[in-house]
Picture 1 (cartoon, rainbow, N blue to C red):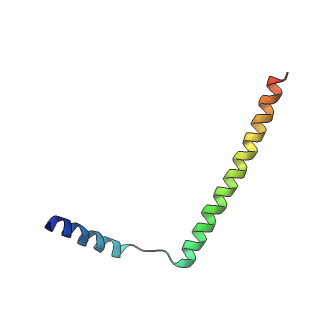
Picture 2: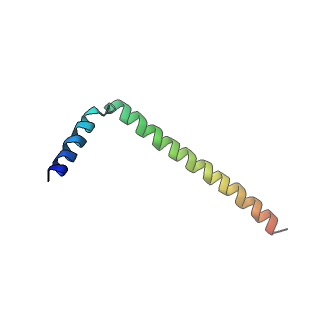
Picture 3: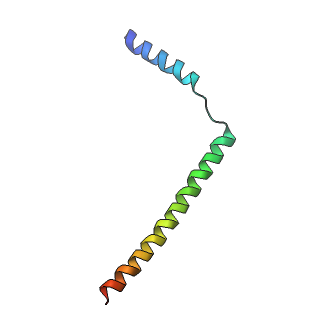
Length: 61
């Protein structure tokens, strides 16, 4: 039982050492991740569309 208690004590001590981001940083990082995700989604949709057109041209020849 002592090992479990020591584990949680050391885990709590390590959690106190973490440098947590501010609310503004968290918001900015979240907006960045969402923006990049949407951007990559549009990029891959466009790439898929172009490849689809190319394959259709090859098949219908």
